[in-house]
Image (cartoon, rainbow, N blue to C red; front, side, top):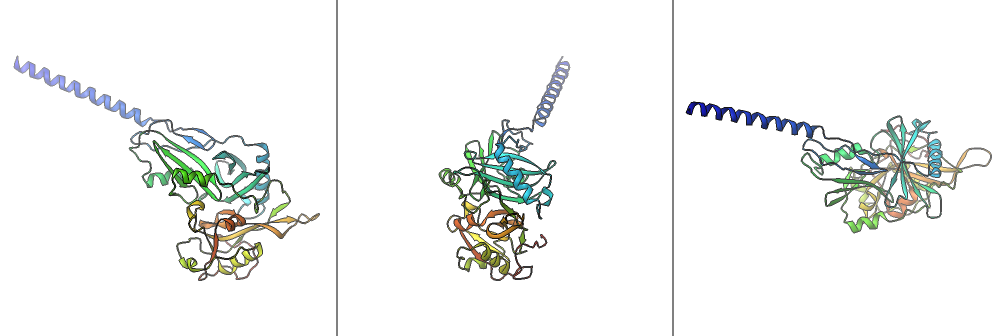
Length: 358
């Protein structure tokens, strides 16, 4: 009897162990099958599922229809820019539009070659009507609002991890001269520079002040002024890292420059540094300027553009991929020469010729 009872007890333990193993495998299988899709409206991406132990959310955006007038301005701008490098791949490209908060006064327009992003525009509504071209750039990597780059950054910085649980919400925002991600994880909110990825040292109140500032429409291309044509891009080949050579910190700020004087200063020095003392975080500064593109007025009856009264966009940041209005930069901060550096192109050469991109 004792032997039989011991055998029965052993059999019972084996059955219970087998049941536990089956249950564990079932739960593991369910967690592995956790769906990766996210619900999205415009650029607001809300994760509605709890993150499993082995899964980090895949970030996605869904394009939505933008106003027809904005689409017209975007198409016209893409067509004009496609005439010259580095935008020639934009010919016959399609576009996808996403609203940018707060208040959806700005839109991100991705320029697409099939499924590949090859550039972007940021277009902002003007208070007096129409739209302005807040910034633009070409390339298949290193552009603002890259979800792939953001995903990698969040994992590397351990802002999201394999043991994350709960919900988070991601929103694309735009402050003058600064693309921003707003990330809320449970009760914690972070603001992240969406161009050169870094967490911004903002409180909620500071974020409100910066994000609700209105960009100045002066010195930017307007949808109400269709007579301007972009001239060929000038690239100096200068230093694009503001921390590689800090001599610019000791250089006095330049007085506000006209388009011609700006081009000459850029050509003679190779790079100009932009900073906004006490407010660098509000503009993603400091960063370097290594090129420019002028938008001239077309001469009547000729179709040719003139550099007189030109609107200038400065090629800014890593590899000079972001084109920002020079007028907005000079209104928001100061420019400094990098006196130890000389351009890789011939000094004094007239801006308008394109030097090889590094």
